[in-house]
Length: 77
Image (cartoon, rainbow, N blue to C red; front, side, top):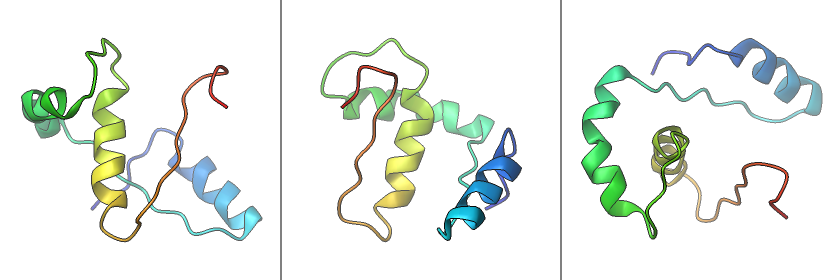
């Protein structure tokens, strides 16, 4: 999978500084064709474009992880 760009260099540098592994996940234009599948997977209707990259993140994470905690915005705790 190619690098996602758009801040990947900064994310990689931060991961290196913290001693963490960094995995870039590319979001391709062809992933837009999966929108019906992504919408069906939602618990509630969401009109936020974040659902597309978050779906890809979850999809990739399930290859090696059991639990992933995520949050978006300042209201997450």
